[in-house]
Image (cartoon, rainbow, N blue to C red; front, top):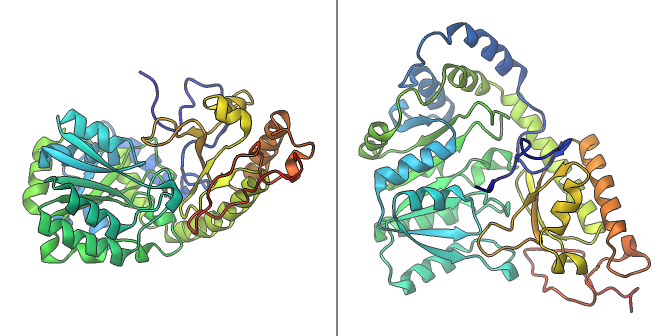
Length: 397
């Protein structure tokens, strides 16, 4: 089976991985120390109930520990919540994270898609979604919302989501809100539903979070959910495998929650380097969407790229650089890509390699790197949501 995600450094010869959206600061030192200490306890079974970790998460988020559930990464909980709800018909936003579809198909659920519009920058307009659901006349039992969305990097504001959650309660739709990249946002509270979640009427909402990205713990596999529907959490506990969260992962999670300075440093780094990379991509003539997260979504509209599937992916892989092709997302093709944000030295090296690729496959303009189009005369509508440097190549004319 073809690998579906970023981070496939095992079947590719790679010296630079820009395909996986992991904190570029790496695993916090205190987490490494906690892992070292936890090794001494690995001859015992881990706490199947994750009591200490749940307590730490409850204190961190100011919620009751009974509202917290832990899993072997966020993907583990995605499959659990689908099995617990057992929807007949679910609604997915497209493009968005692929595991939602996989979990729903594993439960023999029918899926309908709400396709985001490129002319609107692939942003989710909540009122437009509500109107579409009303007009569809379909009785959906479940919906997944990724906020910020993957791969586009856009986040809906808390007040917009709160209104939509009220709408879903009236329609009997169970909502899973995935905030696994929320901590990378400059003002995460402005986009999180956590505070609203504690309202009694929000028992139809499951908030998904993970240690994977923000704490660079992808290899440890640790995710968690917050939900105030006790019956739903009990069903998930019945469905899950025992000892699904290892001793090492639990110890690492408890230590990670204390790394507040590390998280603040991360946000500052991501904000600066994200803008640096966006500007460099624009200067090279790529169509760049205005991501808010720790990754950048862009499109390669070079003439050769429009004719050859995944051209940029293959060109960079030939230089041992891995990026995320978005060709397997619904509504996208091999001209759409996602790259992560790293530290300045790595980003400069990546841009240097990308420049060499662009020189090898120019648009036909004799001064390609100064041309802001590389479109071979093609035009692409630019909206207020996706400001870009695209223009018709005047040099070529």
